Image (cartoon, rainbow, N blue to C red):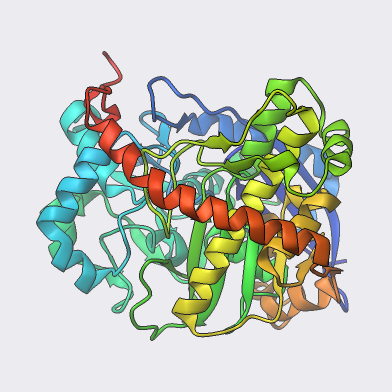
Length: 500
C-alpha cells in the first residue's frame, strides 16, 4: 500500500488526509481538529501558530499508524494569513488572519500612492493582502518587525516546522501585492516602496520538493524520517484539485468559513478586475470572488439561537421560500472581491413580529446563496463564459437545503464533491510528486466521479430572483454608507495597537 499525506491549516481547523493509490485513488483516513481565533480589538483576527501545530499533532494521531507509511507530505493553508518568524522559522508573535481589517487606512494610503505600480506588477485590488498589515505592524509594533527575518504563510509556517525550507508556495505568494504575477517573481520596486523586501521568502513551485522530515519532527508527528515535503498551493486551489475542478474553464465554489468562487483560466489572462487573480502554480490562474462569511454566518445564527445544525436545517427547510419576506446581507466581517468594503457589516431587511427561528435561519442560508449568485454573475462577465455547472465542496455542502438554495440562486446546477477538501487535494499533489499517480487533477476528477448534482428548482428560483432584486438594491444603497460611517467618529481599527 502506498499513501500520500495532505495537511491543510484552515481558518478554524487543521485537517489532514491520507490518500491511497489506486484507480481511482481513495481517501484512506482523514481528520480535523479546531484551533482558536482571537479578536483582541475591533476588526482584528489573530491566531497562535503554536495552536496550529498542536491541532496538527491531534489530527495526525487520529489518522493512525498508517501515516508512517506516507511516501510524501504537503501542506496548504488559509488565504493570506501570515506570521513573522525568526531565522529558524519560529513565530515571534500571533499570526495575522486573512479576515483582519485593522489596516484599512494603510491600505487606502498604499492604493493612493502606488496604484499604478500595483496594477503593473500584480493587478489585484488590495483586499486581504498582507502588506498593509505589515505596514501597520511596522508603525505600531516596530520592535516585532525589526526582530523578524521572514513573513510566512500558515502553510509555510507548519511546513518549516515539519522540516521544509523557508519558502512560500507560489499560490500563497500570489496573495501578496509584491508578487509580480506576470514575471512569477517578487517585484523589487513594489516591495521596496512598501518596506517589506527583506521579509519576503523564497517561492517554491507547485509539486517541487522543499525538504524532508527530520528525526525530531518525525518523533512528534509519527511520520518516517526522511519523508519528502512537497510544495502545494492555496487552500482553495488544493480543494479544487481534489474536486477535479482546477482545469482551464472549470468553475469551483469552495464553501467553508467563507466562500470562494473560482474560475480557472490560463496565465495570460488580461483585465480581471474586480476579481482576485491567484496563481495555482502550474501555469494557470484562479479568478476568485470571495465572501468572508458563509459557514461562519450560519454558525453565528445557530449560536445566537442556541440550536445545533441538524435542528437548524429542519427549521429552515420547514420555512417557506423567501424566508417570510426577510432578505439577509451576510456581511458580518466586511466584504471581499468583487464588492470590497472592509467596513461593511451584515443586515436583515424585512424583520417583523412574525419572523421566527426558521425564517431567520433560512434567511441566512438564502443570503449566502444570493452572494454566490452575485459573484457568479461577475465571474461570467469577466471570464466571458456561461459555466454549465459549478463544482462545490466543503463542510456546509452537507446541508442539503443549502445546496438546493445555491443551485436556485445561481440558476446553475451545483455538483457536490463530498470527498474534496484542501487536505485531500494537497495529498494528491504530494502523491503526484512521489509517483503514486500521474496527475493530481486527474486523480481528483476520478475520485469525484459524477458527484451529487442539485438542479435549480423552479419555485426556489422564483423566490431567489425576487430576493435578489431587493438584495441588489440594498447593496447599492447601503454599501457606501459603511465607509462613510467609518469616517465619522467611529474608532478606526487601524489606529489601535495591541498595547492600547
